[in-house]
Structure formats: C-alpha cells, structure tokens
Amino acid sequence: MAIPDRLDRAAEGARTQFEKGFSAWACRHGLSDWEGWFSTYDETVYEAVLRDVGGGDRVLDLGAGDLRLARRMAERAERVYAVEVNPVVVAHALDGIGLDLPRNLHVICANALDVAVPPDVTMAVLLMRHCRHFRAYVDRLVEAGCSRLVTNARWGMGVERIDLTRTPVAFDEVREGWYACRCGATGYSGTGERPLGQVTEVASCLRCGENELVGDQR
Ligand SMILES: C[S@@+](CC[C@H](N)C(=O)[O-])C[C@H]1O[C@@H](n2cnc3c(N)ncnc32)[C@H](O)[C@@H]1O
Image (cartoon, rainbow, N blue to C red):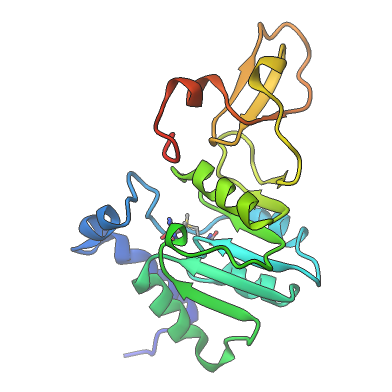
C-alpha cells in the first residue's frame, strides 16, 4: 500500500467531520451548524491574506485548520500562533509536517475562545465563513490591543481587512448605505436610492440590537 503523501493526510483530516463522535465534540465546544467543519478556501483567498502579512507581524490564526495558510504566513511574519480546535485535523497536519515545523509557528490545539490572545499579536486572521462568534473574537482582539483583523467571516464582504483601532460609528449615523457590524452582520440602511458607496463599520446594528444573543448572532 502506498504511503499517503502530505495532501492525502490533509484530506484524511478533512474527513473527520463525518466520523462518529463529531457531533458530541462540536457540541462540547459550542460549535453549531458548519462552524466546526474544516474546509479549505481558494488560493485567491489565501493570497489576499498573505498580501497583508509583513515581516514584523505576529499573527494569530483563528481556526487554522490543517495549517496550510499558517505555514505560509510563518515564511513572512515574525511569528504565527495557529489555533485550531479540532485535534484530529491538527494531528494529521503535524504528522505531515513532521520536523519541518518552523520555530516561529506555534501550534495550539484548543478552542480559540478559551485561549488568551497573546499580548504581542499585531494581526489576526479569521478565515471561517460560518463563524457564529464574530463579536466574541473581535472583542477579545480589541481588548488585547491587536490592531487589525483579516477575515472572510462577514457575509458578502469577501476577504476584508478591519482596522480594529478605529472606533466604529453609531448605527443611527448610517443614513444611507451599506454597513458591516462588529457582531458579524452586514446590511443596507436606507432606501437604496443613492449609488453604492463605502461600507461603514458600525458597532451595534439593528440585528444585534434586536437579537440579544451576544457573541452568537448568526
Ligand atoms: C472553514 S475551516 C478554515 C481553515 C483555515 N482557516 C483555512 O482557511 O484553511 C474553519 C476551521 O476553524 C476551526 N474552528 C472553528 N471554531 C473554532 C474555535 N472556536 N477555535 C479554534 N478553531 C475553530 C474549525 O475546526 C475549522 O478547522
């Protein structure tokens, strides 16, 4: 029988969500719907993230999956903290990497919401289309002094770079235009009569105002 190569091992890791025990594990971690599912994104998504990573960055990769992006970021950044909750995915990834694991790539197998944000983090990455804890991640990053977040977690926004040092505007001030909220929601406020413009970053939108599920708005 052929020895599985690295890609085969990653694919094997990806299948863990179909294994017995996955639902109980996901429930234990408060992961609902597809939030706990491991899947990869297109190369264009990874390239958009990599463009933002500089030599002095200390990056926190939230939900790092099989570490494919974390390894590439570690080639550019000073340090990468890769946090992935699924032990089976992490085990397969580390098994494939073996002794090639770079010194500046710190792999943490845990629920990212249980792990303190390292105080030296300059940038966070959240590639998680089905994220249901967007506000919880943002609040923790802001509190730790992290200045930017690159993410695809807000619907309709593609890969975006959020400046966490800027104070979001009050929702009432968005008279006409698109908004994206720190709760993870996006939407349009107004009648839609004016041409589409910039997206306004708001702190508290109609949706999270109505929905009191703080930290789990989706
Ligand atoms: C869609 S996959 C993306 C993987 C990786 N970011 C990439 O782009 O290749 C999302 C990953 O986030 C992980 N995840 C979800 N919630 C998490 C949490 N609270 N803490 C750590 N990892 C989490 C899942 O287990 C899954 O592997």
